[in-house]
Amino acid sequence: MSLELIQYAVPNSDGTILLWKDITGNTSPTAYGKNGNINYGSVTAVRIKTALYSNLVNTTTINSGTFTQYTEYRLVSPSSAVVDGKTLGVGSLFIPQTAAISVPSGSSWETTGYYCYPVLSTWLPTATEVALSLANTEIGLDSGSVIPDELLQAVYEIYYDTQFGTTAAVNGQQYMVLSGTAVYGGNTYKAGEIFTGANTNNITTTGTFAKMYATSFGYHIMAYGYYTRLYQLIISYQGIYQNEIQDELYQIKSILDTLTFVSSTGNVSYTKFNDLMQLVGEKLTYLENNVA
Image (tube, rainbow, N blue to C red; front, side):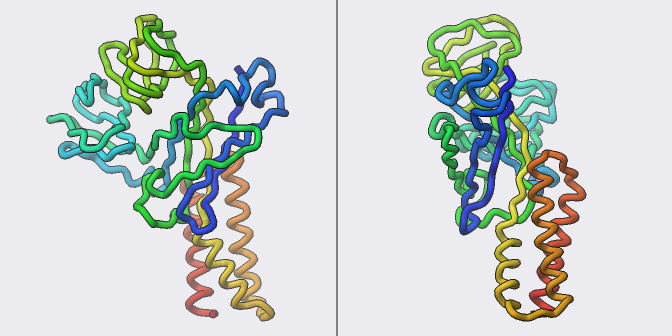
């Protein structure tokens, strides 16, 4: 397999929805349908994990209460814990697919910063590159909130070859449950959960599951608020040719355009990116408060 998935994500016109696209295409040697790769029509499900920069650097630890649905956690201690029908070892990841799952007594879990709403088969990539609309609540934000001006990190996976009944696992193959439950290695997995074959023992399911075919890791600049403020300043100063103002406006746009380009290459430094985003915010505030 040589399929290289290409992601694209931007806020919508009011900043409350993330528009997600698979722009891999079908023309390059590493695209859909090329060099033995599967076609669009063979994709049966997708999985998208998103993480805002602020959540990646400000993780939280819990050892009581309940997990937050669709938030990704990592087991910190003890060496193993039983949660929602699964025995997980330290370092294992867990994304609760239902609400109000209790944190196992005596265990400690840390958020990873990722949020994984179960898209499954409700949206699939196509040659026409129709966007998936992910509401703010589907990327871990509060209802009605605007996507903040920061870096968004994403993991995108496509799945194929949907199966049902009892099937021997393939060692090293990642699977995702699409409906019902799947039992493997004594653990029970729900729709939206993933597991990896560690041997050729049977997978038994009450519904369906599929195999991961390809995955990609991407960065996306979220700057709806900054671009909106920049636009408002440009309108305010239309026809005014003060060098200081024009220079500041140009610098802000140049920084945002550069960050957008750099994020698309994947060559991202969290620290430098965050520093530049803060600089943009400071420049905008300066113009709004001291020049306007």
